[in-house]
View 1: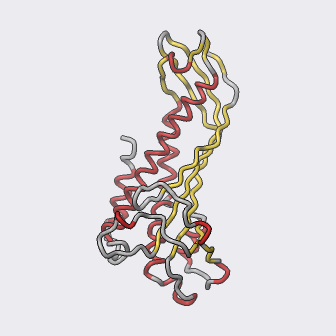
View 2 (view 1 turned 90 degrees about the vertical axis):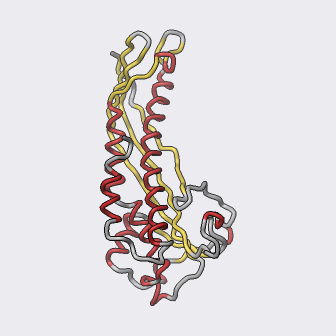
View 3 (view 1 turned 60 degrees about the vertical axis):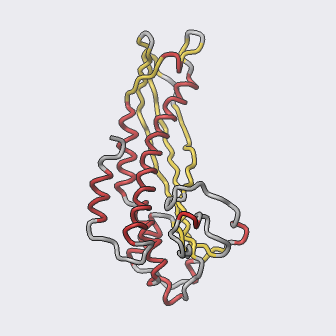
Amino acid sequence: MRLLRTLSFASLLLVAQLALCQEPTTKNESTQKTIRLKDLPEPPKEIARLIDSGEVTFATGGEPQLDARGFPSGINIVGETRFDSKYHYNSNAQWNVNGSSVEIKVRFRSLRLVTKHVVWLKEVPGPEAFWTDRVVLHEFDHVRISTDKRIESQFFKEVRKLSSFVVPASRVVTNGRVDNAKIQRAIRERVKESFERISDYVRIRYRELDRVTRHGLLPIPQNFDEEASASSTNVGR
């Protein structure tokens, strides 16, 4: 069994338009403006917590990035939550060649999941009404989903399942020798798969929130959070 050098990886960047699972677009960035927090009254305690934990900023101007064709006829997009999530990890790896397969053992020395949000508003409420505005509150319901600590915990749990896994020797052996770069790629692929499963789960919860509230027109059902708790434990199964 051979000890590899420390493997340090920065994550791939995933930017997701969670409400409709679309890829982001930059077509309106030049016409958008930042809404500065310092120009607003102090937010309520719970919203302040979400702003801090979700690294939330606000923008207006331009057009929404979501495709209006995904909405029922007659509905205009007046707000959206743009979600930018990254993971970072450092790890040590060992391997053992067993005939036609290679067992890779990984120890994750550090692991982080960082999520940022931009809340885009078509119309900006006046300062005194900002934190009670229906659209603003609905967008923070989205932020609440993607900042839930259960998401981070489940991602960590998924990644730590990768402490030992087996790949075909043909994937990591070059000219009769194990290739360090291919070992790194195998680990990256497994971590990325874990990340994508968690991201898919958040996308589903975003869509479900919009469905049950009709995009904020209705209150959130009492059992919505209970369903989230149950379904989060099934991610990756």
